[in-house]
Structures are given as C-alpha cells and as structure tokens.
Length: 231
Ligand SMILES: N[C@@H](CCC(=O)N[C@@H](CS)C(=O)NCC(=O)O)C(=O)O
Image 1: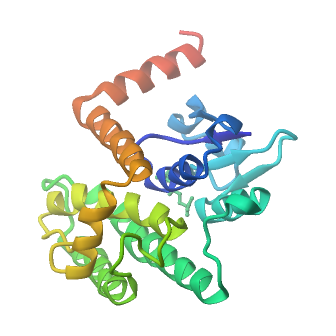
Image 2: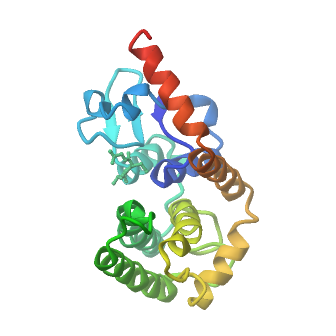
C-alpha cells in the first residue's frame, strides 16, 4: 500500500503514528507526489488533500479518519480503537475533538500567520473555536499515561499532531497557546511526548516545520516541479 503523506501535515502524522504504533510500517510505502505541490493531487484523489491511502489494486482512500478506521479494520488484532464499546466511543470523541475542533480550525488560520496581511476577525473567530475545543478536551481527556484508558489508542494518534500544531503555530498568531490554560491537557502533552511513537512523529513534524521555515521545502518543491515539467 502507498500512503501519500507529508512530514508537517498533522492529518498525515496521525496516520503515520498509528502505523508506527501497530508495527506495520513495512507494509506501506510513504511518498508525496509532486502533483500535490502543483495543486493537482485531485487527479489522484478528488478531495485533493493528504493523507491518501492507495491500495495495491489502485483503490484510493482519502481522509485521515477513514484511513485510520480502514487500517484498524485490516489489522483487527492490532487495532487501536479500544476494547469495550464505551472505550471505543471515548477514543472516537477525543479523536474527533482533536481533528474537527482543534486541527481544522488551526489549519484554516495558518494563512493568518503573516501579521502584515492578517485579518484579526478571522483569527478571533477560529481561535475562539480552538479555545472552545480545548475546553471540551480538558473535560474528556484521561489523567493516566494515555488519552483514554491504559493503552495507546487512535485518540493519542490524533491528539499528538493536533497539540504539536497548536503549540508550534498558535503563539505565532499572537494568541496564547491554549494548552497552557488547560491543566489536564498540559499534563497529558508533557507525558505523551515521551512515548516512542509520539516522539517519532513529533520529530518528523519538527523536520517539516524547519524545512518550511528555512526555505528547504520550497527549494525541494521547485526542483521537483521543474523535473516533472522536464526542465
Ligand atoms: N479532513 C482531511 C484534512 C486533510 C488536509 O487538510 N490536509 C492538508 C495537509 S495537512 C492538505 O492536503 N492541504 C492541501 C490543500 O488544502 O489543498 C483529513 O482528515 O485527512
């Protein structure tokens, strides 16, 4: 199987963390086609966003949550969704909070990073939603080593990239990192970064952020596009 994925993409990082934690990395080839940078990923997957899973028969599965469910379905003995119906519901709720209320809103706000072109009303609207989502997470998150119960689950796989994204970008929007005001979330974030699989994706996301900030990513993309155009 092929996973179209990028270092910095939090939605991709969520699926990669699941793959690492399930010990099934050898069954996947990770790549990022140049069409993504040319705005043409929709030629491969109509939604045009990563991650995308391409099965060996060519079937295309978009959307991180759907890919995560699919991977659990094909490796049921390693599934990371919890054991009881209640635990599974808790994992899904936390993954949904991280995805829908945190990642989506922060992601939409990334275009406001430049103070010169920033529209304060957009930042206020989206960061208000993030703060509300963080408040909900504070109520739902567990106080043990993991987000739910006593094992690493897909709740952790979604939360780790979401909290990394939050910590590394929200202060750059002129807004205080909302993790700091959420006691249980802050304690969880400090703990989970020591988990070996969380540490791998955090390193990958840091590498991606560094490449974005120091211009390495842009250079690599320009070269890949020139090569694709035969230049
Ligand atoms: N709901 C999607 C969101 C995926 C998403 O927005 N991915 C970003 C990268 S992190 C992307 O591909 N953006 C390209 C674009 O917006 O054109 C999921 O869960 O997979």
